[in-house]
Image (cartoon, rainbow, N blue to C red; front, side, top):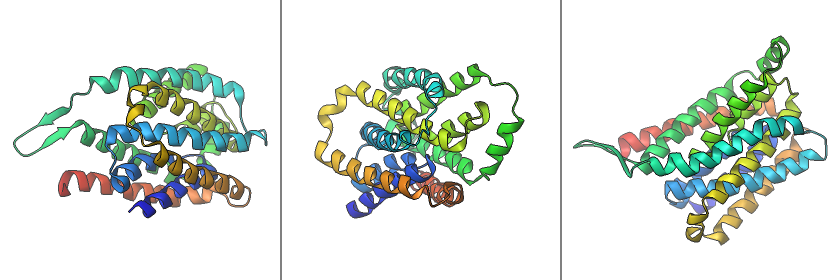
Length: 266
């Protein structure tokens, strides 16, 4: 199972390198199901893994000029604030047992996993859609609305802070459709925002750092970094738009599996 988990880490990095989104959303399920890490702690692990992997990917793309820095700050600053508040306020508000009956107990870990599965279904829909419509719609959009982008940044921060997911599937469409950013720059900009958000969330979890197996975390992160470097190199030869629907169907399958397993098999 651990070997499968490390292969998953490689695929996660490949996805981020090739299409700029989707891969990070696999990190928590891999940690929970293949490495038996508690769900809440897995979100902390995920924040570090996604952060360091995205930072490497962003560094690779920065050399090609594929980062829109004004959009990075406009989207990223509200997003980072939202990440901090989510980890500081929202997560502590969740009780250990959220709901229970004689036959069913919805505890915090299960609730987070189900939220994660729902997020995977939403992400898969975003990836399966024909990505050409992003380019088409971006030309039809009216005047650029910075407040809409700030609002989207706050929303992405909640997703990252609450679940430890990067949110690239939300960031890239927002940059393309709302800010009319070219796709290659949207991917590079997304990686910078994901890295900043993830490190903010991981830093906020300083109280959990003593529970982390740092050797394992660095091993997993190294494999994911290898994946994103390979993916970034291949992105010049392979169209990420063609691979995105395939990866979307994989995430859709995983999301359905998690819901079915947790509600009917556990």
